[in-house]
Length: 56
Image 1 (cartoon, rainbow, N blue to C red):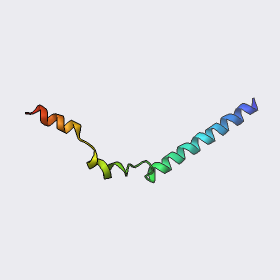
Image 2 (image 1 turned 90 degrees about the vertical axis):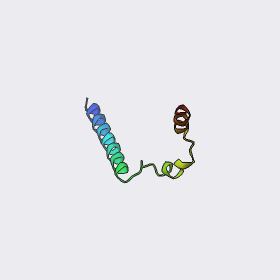
Image 3 (image 1 turned 30 degrees about the vertical axis):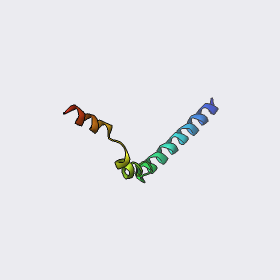
Image 4 (image 1 turned 30 degrees about the horizontal axis):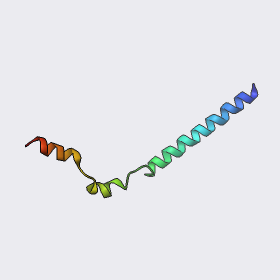
């Protein structure tokens, strides 16, 4: 039974450390998309072309 308490404690410690690491990375901008805005003008705007063709 004591092994169960130890394993629960270890799992809580690991899960809290992953949560803290995720929040830290999110605050530091790790998940910000810096690539897409730079190349957005190179993508084809199919939706805009369809709107122009439907309005004729």
